Image (cartoon, rainbow, N blue to C red; front, side, top):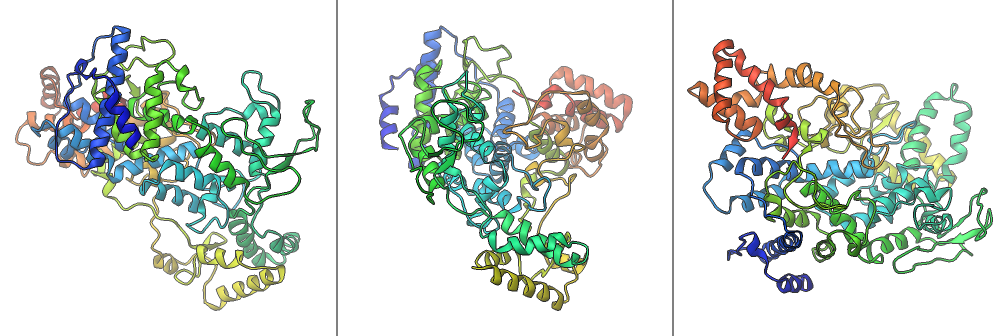
Amino acid sequence: MKNLFCAVMLISSVSQAFGLEQKEAKVGEDLVFLKKSALAIDQHIAAFYRRQNLPVPEVTDDATYLRRAFLVAIGRIPTSEEALAFLEMDDDAKREELVQHLIKSQGYSSHMTNWAFDLLRLRDNQPGGQANNEPYRNWVRSAMDSNMTWNEFVTRLVSSSGNGWDPKTAAVGYYTIDRGMPLDNLSNTMRIFLGSRMECAQCHDDPFGKTERKDFYHLAAFTNGQYDQNEEYMSKLWTELEKDQEERSEEYRFAQLFRNRIFGMSLGGGGAGRIELPSDYQYRDGSPGEMVGAKTPFGKTVRMSERKDDSDGREQFADWIVTRTGEQFSAIIANRMWKRVMGKGIYDPVDEYIESSKTVHPDLMSFLARLVHELDYDLRAFQQVLMLTRTFQFGTNPNPSRVAGGDDFHGRKIERLSAEQIWDSLITLSSGDPDKMAKRTADNRIYVSNSPVLVGKKDMVQLSNEVLALESEAEVRKYFKDFMATVKSGGTDIKSDDSMMAMSEVKTYGLDSPVRASELPSPAPREHFLYLFGASDRLVVEGSSREPNVGQVLSMMNGYVQRQLVSNNDSHLYKSLEGASSVDEKIRRLYVAILSRAPTGEEMDWMKEEVTAQGEEGYRNIVSALVISSEFLFLQ
């Protein structure tokens, strides 16, 4: 952090435009650095205001800031208790303390998990087969929980190989989720981590970009040669049983377990480093079927030989992405996080890289890219810096940007909440703090015909490690036969057995369980609240939508909201009214719980009229009206 610290101190002091003053406090060295970095960002933006002759926006009120901080940092509104505690606190440092609390809470990792699942298109199951992504899902969730640094996260995904069930190597799900589509996987890799859109170059030179088709295949060579680990030891047995499914149905069901959920969820090899040009290759710089070696198209050149297969292509590819692409790797994630916190990217779309010098705000963009690097790619610390800025505290600006091609940073733009933020906020109202609920755990049980076997005796991690360690077809056949015998002799019926289910410590949740979206099945089915409100189907990168539709209105008026919140006497929202001695106090508590603010005088008069006319039913009508309001559904 030393180099960036020097840069921070050298920036001319234009912070007076904000009325900013550094407070001396006994805080750790890391927090001091984060605060100085936040100040430096504000200084860059203050200088921008002066150049653009823009007035300095006012800082927003505590209620708006509270709700904004919760939704941005942890993806839900505060509970009524959390809201009251903050609003009634008389402490000049309470906003800074709130950010520190939120960014280190369980809610932060839950919110980041939703982001990562959407970015990586992570689905629980693989369509059309019995293999699933349960261990991969758990690996990504664990990475978010532990705040794995972004460079390590990307490196482990892109360089992965081995057993898909083993927690140490479950990152192979990044490739097995796209089994049979390695070129599409490569396109997504370049788009997600480097902001390089190369999908057109799979078929032809990109007429709108700089990528030629041969460049794409040079890159594809790094990850070429993907296969199921030791698949050749199982292939003959599988073929035999597949031909005779009816006569040997029991053996076939066991073989499905081995073929699909062990071998099929593994990843062999490490990247051959060379690939054949396709049969329809049409350019003069190569011929159909010609073997080309791996080579990078920009950054520091990395190349591999086209004359022989190698075994570390994916490792070299991962290293190039993370360490040899200049500022591109750090700038892309910096802009992604800026949009996540501030509501709008410094440039959009965030997955199409623009050199810092060519953006509307070159100095700021360059500073942010360096900051990510100096923070060792700690995304939690980076987001904390952004939330500590005065820029994050500016009031809402409903007007479009005054600057062509970028943001004017003149207050936060109003945006619709994501499906996950709406769901998690409704869960907060109905059940209280959802981050106190037990998290979903990985289901490592062994399933045959959709029922668990050998529960408490062996799980998929042990079974898969043992099977993938076998070194010949003969060993696989013997292990397969012995495994079937073990299941039968252990008295484990492959039919449903509730007693075995009870032995498991697996924690799962149904679709309407009052838990955070990150704990629910992924993706949500079409009939679920999350899907209706635009949650991604996880088929494309960042495939979610925030567009409204009539179905959403009907759902809020007649669906889950009415059942679990408005008409539910046991909801946490109504419990917050206990002890309130007046109509005014009850209405005030409902407003604080739902909108994180007290009602205005005019609103109070309206709501009191409703309660006078409708009695106790009037409170339900107030809840229904507030939850369906734009103020609840939008982030300011």
